[in-house]
Every structure is written in structure tokens, then in C-alpha cells.
Amino acid sequence: MEISWNDRDPIYRQLHDRLVEMILEGTYRNGDSLPSVRQISADHRINPITVSKAFQLLVEEGVVEKKRGLGMYVMMGATEKLARDEKKFFLTEEWPRLVEKIKRLGLSIEELLEEGSVK
Amino acid sequence: MEISWNDRDPIYRQLHDRLVEMILEGTYRNGDSLPSVRQISADHRINPITVSKAFQLLVEEGVVEKKRGLGMYVMMGATEKLARDEKKFFLTEEWPRLVEKIKRLGLSIEELLEEGSVK
DNA sequence: TTTAGTGTTATACCTAACTATAACACCAGA
DNA sequence: TCTGGTGTTATAGTTAGGTATAACACTAAA
Image (cartoon, rainbow over all chains, first blue to last red):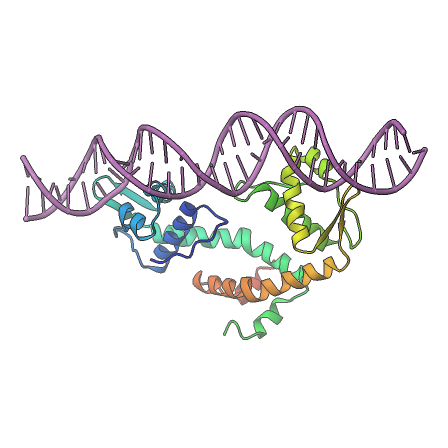
């Protein structure tokens, strides 16, 4: 797991997002164990507390389950839940704003599709 | 000028972005004066230093000109420059990522267009 | 029962990004 | 020259997010 940090967002947030991505991509599947706090902490030279914060978020979102003394596990159904949430967020929040932006920039979606970037 | 703050990004950044938006929308045009530091500071109960930071960014980007003792002015050509920059950023950075995301979500652009959200 | 792996927490310190309050420096117009 | 508008800056304090180092608590397996 490699992460290219930006300095706009807090590290625990970026780590959280990266883990979500990896679960969505199937790198970690339902029931799998995730890399340990110590492991991530060492790999990225990050404080364990910072790593814990990222996991804490995931736990609160119902994506990950902590087993003290054992590790962190992807909850059953997490992949589906994340995919559902992401889709919903995209449709209700991102897409409408995007359409506005495209209009404002004087572009059209048809035009963008011609660019060859899609096929 | 009303701003709904989020607590993800620093206030000076959000203020900066909002001002850029307003210039792009034509609320402030080339050569216009912008609301004063004190004005914005009072309206939003923000520290003048924070407001200054937002303006400082705009100055560095060549969008705004400071006239000490007078105020802040939209530079000539700023609107065009911003529009150009935003379009370029959108085409090279945002759109490609977006196309990927749409694919990943199992959606198609054709499908999204049918939603009636565009026309 | 020891060991080596888990997550958790305490202490102490740093920095960025704020806050409030106040003073300083500049400029145009009455 | 004064006044009321500009932007700027100093002081002092708060909070979130991070760092390093170390210790504590739990669990499975040798």
C-alpha cells in the first residue's frame, strides 16, 4: 500500500480514504484482516495514534471491526455498503454540481465524450 | 456574500475559493474594488488576518491587486485568466478522474444524461 | 506460561490555523 | 489638516493534527 500524501488534508483522513478505496477495489475483502496499526505506522513512518484515528473512522462508519489483540477486520457487507454509499453520494451531490460546472465552463458533455477519453 | 463554511478546509482557503467563484460569475468584474478586509471580517466574524490571507493568495495568483489605503481591486484580465485556468484544470485533472469513477460505479454517462438533470 | 503479535494510551512537545483586541501606516476628500 | 476609510501587524491565547517514545492490555499459539 503506497500513499502519496498531500498536505491539504489530515493524514488520518487520507489514510482512511485510501483504505476505503482498497476495499472497494477488492484488495481487502469482507472478513479479511487489514494491516496492523504497527505495520502501517512503521511502513509510512506515521504515529500509531494517527493510524488509529483512521481506523476509528472506519469503525464508526461500520466498515471495519476491531478485535482487540487480534487486529482490524473488514465487516461482512462492507464492500457492498461502501459501493452503495459512494454511488448515492455521487448521484445526489457530485453529479449535479458537476453538470453546473460544465455549463459554466462553456463545455458540453457531448463535446467531452468526443475527446476519446471515455471509449 | 454568504458563505457556508465547512470544517474540512481552512477558512482563508474557503474564502479565497468563494471570491474566485464570484469573480467568475461576474459579481466582481475587472477593475472593480472588492469588499474590504474589515467589511468581510465584520460580516462573517472572521479575524482580519484570516481575511488577509485569502487576499494574499489572490494577489499571488495575479487575480487581485492591493492598493494600500484604498482597497483590493480585481486585476484587468483576471476573469479571463481564471476562466482559462479553471477550464484547463478541469479538462486535464478532474474530467479524467471522473470518467474513471463513473466506470467504477458501474454507471454510464449516457445513463446519467437521461436523468433529466442536464436539460 | 512465555512469547510475539495485536490495539490503546500517556507524556511531552511542535506547528498551522484560527480567535480577540488593539494599534500602526497609508490615502483621499472635506 | 483632520476624518474616515483602506490594509497591516503585534500580542496572547485556543484547538486540531501531528511527532517521538514508551508503556499498558489483550489474544493465540508454541
